[in-house]
Structures are given as structure tokens and as C-alpha cells.
Image (cartoon, rainbow, N blue to C red; front, side, top):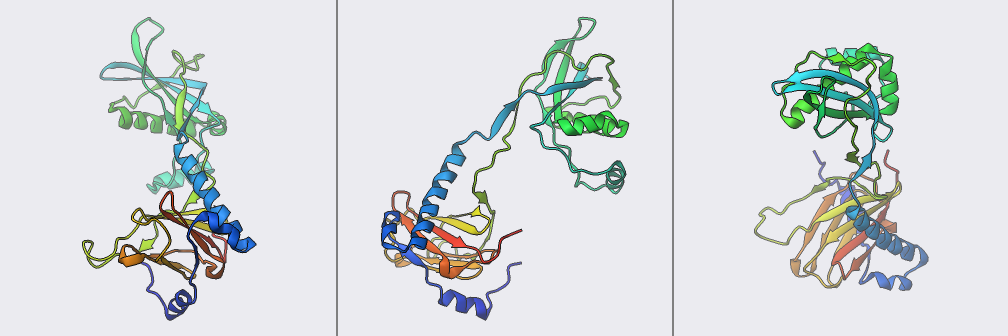
Length: 302
């Protein structure tokens, strides 16, 4: 629940008219600090646009571990339990802590896994079968080698994951192959890239809505990021405008309010961070029709 605005917030809003530049190229007319914030706005916006075009996955080559044999209604199934350092490890819990969590039916524990595509193989008798590659974190795999409990748990979760992903019904009974770490060949897999853009998206913030969606000014789209631990950036899409003329912007310690000319736009957003309103700066990017706002923070978010 977002708290209503207090009288203190109202006063902060009234005393915090933010400097609006008509274009980013006007930065040379400002003081050094304002110009620095304008450059940060432009560079961070470019970084975000580039981050959106980067591939969201990367290829890994899992290393063999051990292989188990089970079956389904369609025949024999082999699961190659593999590992890769590129896969994140699960939470570092002792076996007693993990067992207690499972007994209490808590869903907070996860073992990150990469489930590969099925591939047709031949078993030791030359008969057709299906194999799957399931990869876990390498450090966790080494820990699992010395624990029957963890090995049983990983096989169970892998089996259930394959059933969910491919609509299978696998026999819960299985056995580990001796002296055979994998069946067939282990293919490369695509996993979500560990890289993150330098700007971290904050997520949803509270935005007050108009009483009727069909009447009144339009609520523009807003993106918020942490460019650094002590700097918050905002992009506000204003496709109907060609410049900053007529725009008003007020920033309080935890709220951003923007008004557009001729009541085209209105935005009133609660931000769950403490903003240095006096040091905040904004500029209109006329090519992208966006209002860019740089807001230094009074306290660093944890």
C-alpha cells in the first residue's frame, strides 16, 4: 500500500521545480554539475538501448558427470547429469537445513538447471533410445558427488523438470550406469546470459491513474533505472511533443510529477527511494521524444 502524500511531501514538491533543458545539446549553457548529469543521461540511455539489442542467452558446453537409466511409455530414457561453471549455484544450505525445508514443504529452495533437447541414441545393445542432458553448477556437482541425498534430489528434480518441459511421464525408478559418465554426445546448450546491462531496472513504481481512462491527459510510459548506487535515471516517453516548451516537472524526496502542455500528459509517480530534488536535472531528447531525468539519491538503496 502506497502511503498518501504527507504535508511535508507537498511542501517538498512545491519547492522543487527541476531545471528543464530544451535539448541535450544545451548542456554547455549550464554549470559543470548540470552538464555532467546531462551527459550521464545521454550515455545511460544509449547503454540501455544497446543492452536491449544484446543476445539474452549464451552457449555453454556442459561437462559430463554421470548417467542414469529409466524409461517412459515410449521406451528407454537416459539422463546425462552434466555440469558447467556458467550455471549459477543453488543456495548454500547444509543437508540438515535443506531436509528441514523440504519436510516443511517450503518452495524457496531451487537448483538452477539447464535442460537440453532430446537426442536419439543407441544403447549398449544397439537399440534405439532417447537421451537428455541436464546441467547444474560445477561446484555444486562436486559437492553432490559426495552426497547420496543431494544426488537423489538432483535426479528427482531433473526428472520432474523434463516431464514438465516435454510432457513426459518418466518412471521414478532409475539406476546409475557404471563406468559410463554419459550416453551419446553432450551438445552445447543455450542458457540465459549472466551479463546484465550497467543500468539496473527498478521495476514497477506506483503511478496515480486518472479517474477515467478515456478523459483527461494521457499517462506516459515511464522507465526507471539505477545508473549507479547513488543515481536514479528516468525516461518518460512523450511521442506527441517536439520539445520541452510547456513541460513542468516537480521532484520531491520520493515522488515525481510531470505535466505536459495543453494537458496532453500527466504523470504522478511514487518512487521508493530518497531523492535529492535540488540536485536533480532533466532534458528533453527531441529525436527520441523523451524526457530524461537524472536524480541523485540522498541514501544508497541496499
